[in-house]
Image 1 (cartoon, rainbow, N blue to C red):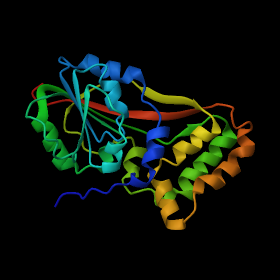
Image 2 (image 1 turned 90 degrees about the vertical axis):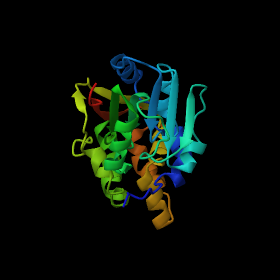
Image 3 (image 1 turned 120 degrees about the horizontal axis):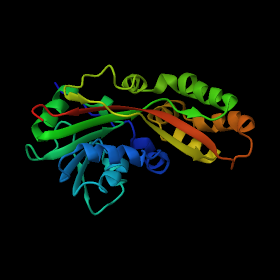
Image 4 (image 1 turned 180 degrees about the vertical axis):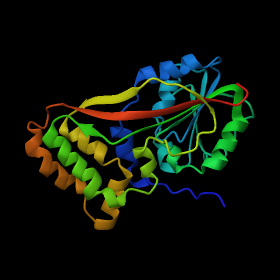
Length: 253
């Protein structure tokens, strides 16, 4: 029996679209350089198409799939990106057609055995697989960061889906049946105002689950709690996430 799809982001789709951080351009440059051909990339679990649009700068065609109706409906349009409502385990792609397969911040939701079978089916012999996730957010300033960590772990901690553990361990506990390619370290960094950080916190699936269960927005109390440590709300603070990246080549490549 396959793993049933549960849309953890339906209630927070608009926040996800507006407030998720962008991946570094250097990441997509590096991945494109690893590929011998640049005809087709499959962005599996695309969400709002954040990675797909960046990949379109390097590949002739991007197929971006997601099992969430809400996420696909909110995805960013691009002339070289085709969005498709599809589960990770059934892309609808032709066999041996994909130069690069990427999964950004979504592998932990998949039925891995079936997804990896689909990956092997659609990848070219020289194809490359890259999966990544970004870990626990860190905020500039010790006092502000301590409050943020308390919010993450204690306030909404019980509302994270069980799969979140794999993000926190950088996907190292998940199987990855491909010939490994050593990858450099990448970090996500942005400078955000207080309001921008609050928007990001509202994009978390755990925040949506907390609000559904308790009937209140937990970010409101957190914003009040952090206001003193933050100071001027319009003052930008550095926000960072460690990026965990696993890259491999299809067997026979």
